[in-house]
Image 1: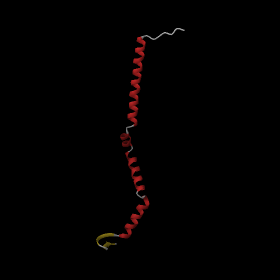
Image 2: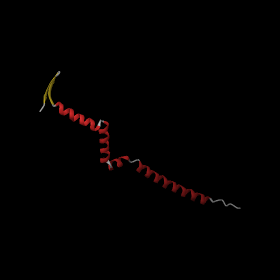
Image 3: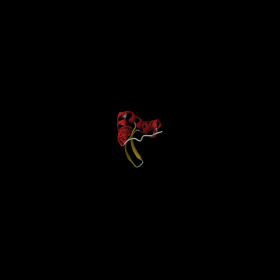
Image 4: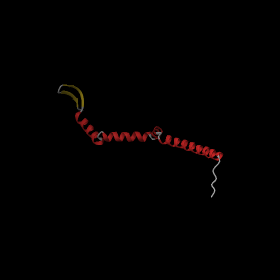
Length: 94
């Protein structure tokens, strides 16, 4: 079995083709990585949803519905404080 060795011209051509394929692959990877890591455009596209989610998480973390109901119940019992001096307070209870 005789094996023919490729000529210098063929080797150079194959190397050039391989370099071109590698350059295309690198460009494609750069584009894919850029699209995958572009978080700001993804957030901008879904800003109302993200803002609503952040509000909901903050609301629940702060005590949620129970804290809001206690606040309004307490506020209804206390009335509006007009002035305070030590333990004496002027409260407007309508």
